Image (tube, rainbow over all chains, first blue to last red; front, side, top):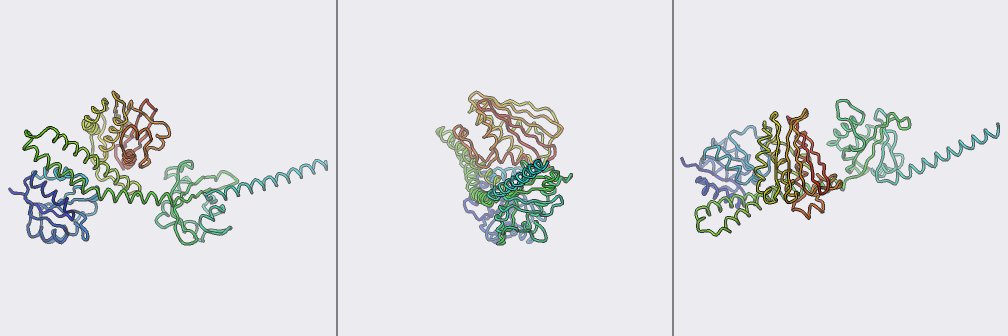
Length: 119
Length: 380
């Protein structure tokens, strides 16, 4: 099974790092790189990746609004929320199958999520 | 007889004059202090204020608080703190007793211009003293201190937030570099993997620093919260942290031993308690002597787990011990001995306290340090 991902982050350095890391180290197919909430909604709904990675804070919008929109649009895959600060995961009890990783942890928290999924 | 009466009368008159002089001196001295004092009756009614208090709030002599009471002057967000402090001062049995020698609260109080100033309030219960028959509450303007702390907190938060992405990028890129080099490692000089390892070590150190900055900022602003609560096997956690520090301990020729008494699991944030043990172990090694030792013990007690780290390191004088926990504080001796920021210990102490625990330090110069953490079985 080919695992695919859409990466959504407004910081191009970290967006490209996640993409290279996932492609080179986990053989995951990066099918979209979104730089804004609007792009995130559009790419995720269009590409229907196995999972999506969404930065929680993507000025001027925010990742959580984009996640609510893609869920409303029918996307059911797991979503990794990348948060800038530890403990930012409070308050989104309405969202299902979302997994939080702290940006501060670097790739180690993402690796734990992928290991758990068997990817 | 008459002459005795005259003498007594003259003596009383002198005493009254003496009283008057003493009172004048007392009031003048109080007025000259930067601290204002308010006198409250046993039922909390306003009885009077020193001139320093009136001056602090910009009021003329003879000022009286508004009809609704002093609380009307306190910022709405701080009124709960003020009421709770007064209840403690009054000996409310449901609350922790007020210690007039150490306890204080910071409140925003409105001055005559309608601006709020941060005042540090300290109270003394003198209801049993017939001269006072109530409470004395002193106020010191600490606006500069509070604003400096708020500025530092905001700076730490911004710096940490901005540094997280580049640090994460470095760590991710190092993973990629290592995996790429692994394919050609036979052809590489040994300096290449060693350099990558040094880069990773530096990036991880920066990651810890960024975390300490963020934690310190949260603790300053009262926003530090524990994220998870898990049942944790403390013995396993301590064993893992000692193993993780083996390289650093070996580099410094410090021997770490442990003794853990079997006991119940503890409900804590495992990431945070690991951070506490790792920070304390790292400190014990960094400030250890060549060939020194660190003994870690953990024993279940009535009030929770008692974790103790005893080292044979450089130790600290009493002044340094008293200042431990102040963000950014490092003694001159510590600066000479090892690199650091002075944030790690403050954060460690904050994490223990966020679990409802206590952290105490005893130390002796050139003899070593004992750090004792008392961790309740179930963090509130």
